[in-house]
Length: 443
Ligand code: NDP
Ligand code: BG6
Image (cartoon, rainbow, N blue to C red):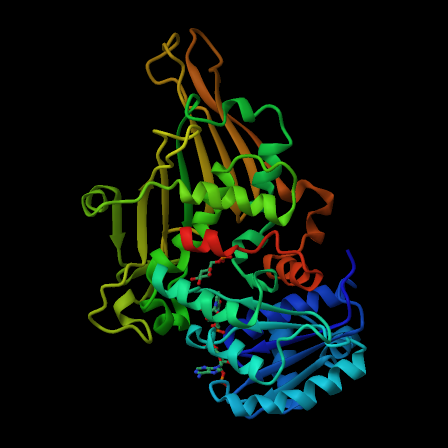
């Protein structure tokens, strides 16, 4: 599917996500010819920047993060524009009207507009309302889509309230709730591994699987985001969105066809089957922790309470582990152990499927376990562990491994990163890899 000429309006354009992820993703899409020439990017925030100073800031970020250089970089920057708007003040949005008219005329984008909300979440309900007040949400002149960053609400009540607000001005098909884990090639590969191989399906259930582990470990701390993180914690920052989406990919039923609706139906179904925890279950099935000062790569690093923006008496968890159960025929009785944390010894995101052992140990009491390890990042790949005979006398079994590494595929270097893939999909109008409202509520 080709993308149509369009304008991408980024709210929160002076912020961290814009220069670290969004602009680099757009630049890379431009570089490989996926964006064409008929697009513009209009950055919006309260800071008083001009087109030129915004371009300079973004150029510096591209040089720093993408090692960008030369004519390609200069060409890309000519597509960048900026408009200062007080984003919580409805009247101020009038400034967008002449800018958007000018850009749609210049790039022949006929009103097609993708709004990206990369501001503090308190504005996710406000911006759609202010856009609507100026007629900027109607599709009479070109399509209008809106990408909403995480967190989508703080709990079920606020998530529903936010949905209601956004739905006043945008229809569900126009709303793209981003979860960048769904844009990761290796997360999507979980589906292809499961549903394009006859080998796994007969084993993929409670009869053969003992338990499943899903780990999202990070070596970094909260960095500059202590203010945000402290109101969120590991549970809201990683578990209820990214890791539950991974769990859904592992546990969902095969969709009849791969399209946005049938995929998202299956994801929502499995999330709805997650067994709710009572207060008693929480005591037994959830572990929370917080990192303290220590040494990483021979360097002393601060504990969580000494991080910028974190109150000295904060109780926010930076580590969590939880035992989840899925109440359906496929998974009843199979625990899914999910854990995530910051400042852990190593960075690894992986899914490990532990198969049941043989019914009777013929060779030794410690027969190796059969495991399928799906490494989401880094060193993306898949590894199957099983037992073979240890060379020499006797019949002792030893664990061996059959490995596949993504980097061995010759096409691996041309893979799109998560933000590249998701921005491209939103520009094409493909919502398959975005979270639907019922799944967000279930999470
Ligand atoms: P920042 O705090 O760095 O940026 C926030 C942006 O919003 C700035 O451009 C700020 O610019 C603008 N803004 C507009 N109105 C307001 C207002 N009333 N108060 C404060 N700022 C305002 O945040 P991030 O870029 O890190 O994150 C943006 C969103 O993306 C957040 O919701 C975050 O949860 C989410 N996110 C961020 C990730 C990251 O890695 N950074 C990862 C995943 C999600 P100005 O002050 O000029 O108006
Ligand atoms: C973000 C979280 O959504 O995901 C961060 O807010 C976390 O705290 C990040 O570090 C992890 O993403 P990735 O792609 O590096 O695994």
